[in-house]
Amino acid sequence: MRVIPCLDVDAGRVVKGVNFVDLRDAGDPVEMAKLYDAEGADELTFLDITASSGSRETTYEVVRRTAEQVFIPLTVGGGVREAADVDRLLRAGADKVGINTGAIARPAVIEQIAHRFGNQVLVLSLDVRRSAEQPSGFEVTTHGGRKSAGLDAIEWARKGAELGAGEILLNSMDADGTKQGFDLELIRAVRAVVDVPLIASGGAGAPEHFPPAVEAGADAVLAASVFHFGDLRIADVKKALRDAGIVVR
Image (cartoon, rainbow, N blue to C red; front, side):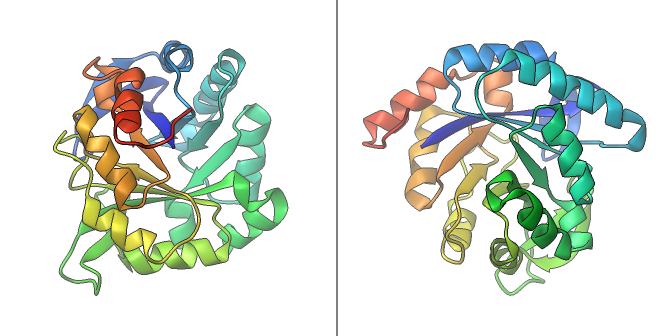
């Protein structure tokens, strides 16, 4: 079981909000990455949440600096549209690359990336919210959760894994930043249709929120604001998981 802090980065700074809005500054990504590495995080996820062409080189530079400072796997996402973007991020020091909107726009890119680099490199990220318009009751969103993709989230997760995604990062927009716990129904629904590793994201607020996510089917648990603002430490989460009989590193 992996515990993964997530750094949402905008213009070279870590930010965090609630339900993807009201963002506030949380610090320098390189310094935070070093701290999490020292505290025992199993991996780091780094998401460029604006990913505009103007800030792209800033992102590569922050990835380079972060990769030089940490010795745990680093996943980077944001603005990935094609295999060439993956190549550049891997050369900058990323171990894995996350794709979201780019895969929705052109699903074939999942196959292309997996074929060129191996599916272990590719993390398919889903920003999901509840919707009565989709058969499963969950829909995929894009543009930081501002737009509906018109896709059933459970079906898209299944298709993404079939196309070659090596891992699914499942973020509940409804739970994001609320600190009320993970969306266990969503985790169970995706777990039922994919056999690749599943990272649960969105809603963590207390140590006791993490074991139920694992029991629902998550292979890793991810959190952001509770770590950034000192509400929880990595050790707190690992202790809660151990106490629940879950094996952690």
